[in-house]
Length: 248
Image 1 (tube, rainbow, N blue to C red):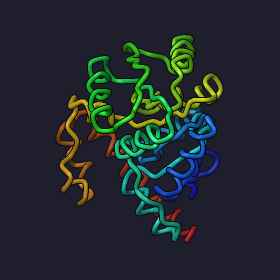
Image 2: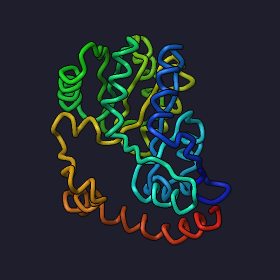
Image 3: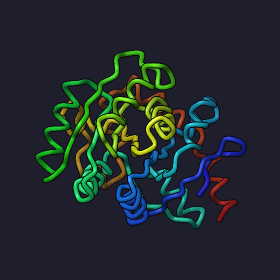
């Protein structure tokens, strides 16, 4: 299903978890790289204003629905999508990597957080092989020479899966660049997922997530950053709702 308005609309092309894991497993077995993005309302506010972000999104092989508003809009349009937040994809993707013998790299956050996330993942997933950790410095340019060096290092490590936790749009731009620079690596953009695993950030309690209140938790944790973001998201919802109704 497509979201947004031409010429800046993007498509969620993987509707279910089963379809995602089937596609990723096939790519792992073939050692074929990919880029996986998780679309949410915040991304939809940025895409029309950032051509490099839009181009990166359109270079992704796999796009899933992240955020309940995206899922609700898909149902309203009669084309239902499953909710697949990036943070929830980390463990099952690690299970698949361990099952198929695919080494893993972690990129983003801080070195301390990456080490904590690595320890947590190895404890949780028997047979998981984490071969590379890289925390880019402040001001990292995902389209610059430093990004090329990072991607070369990931490829040289033998990793077949790289979790990218840099936030949008940096993580998606780096992942799209990786499709050409490191074509045997699958890049999955997962936002704050590694920080949650390492304990450097606290995710909303499970009950709040089940009640679709994770946004409220995040707003309370970081109001100066999140409240303006959510306000922008609310502003585009009426237009997206009308669009979904037309597509029904």
